[in-house]
Image 1 (cartoon, rainbow, N blue to C red):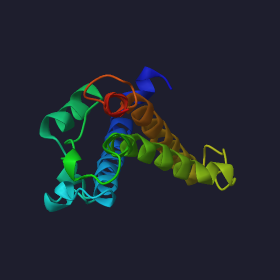
Image 2: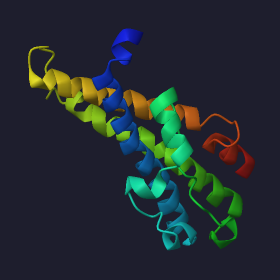
Image 3: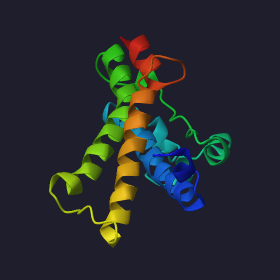
Length: 162
């Protein structure tokens, strides 16, 4: 994809909207795994939800709009409330977000794998295919980027937990 194509206003709006779809799922996954492992901190603070408003960080959202990358509010976790092996539980909570992005990418790839989308650029399915491809790429990039072992990314928390 060329930079000119990437910077088209409609494309930028679509990319921001797709990112605002992926980000709450990523943060919800952290909250859900923590909850399932015994920590209800995020649930008590209203973060065990897919509502984007619960996960939007004001600065991260502005960065997304103006710089092309952003972040959500980190999910509050109390590691001492986690059941089982503390190191494993912390690693599972940390890896849950990137894993959710991989799952979203795989789900978005199903229509391509099943042959439900054709390549005819004159059809509405072509536009839908472009949006799905963008969604796949956004989620793969989010997953891989978040697994980098650089603080404050999830990968650094996984590494620290193990």
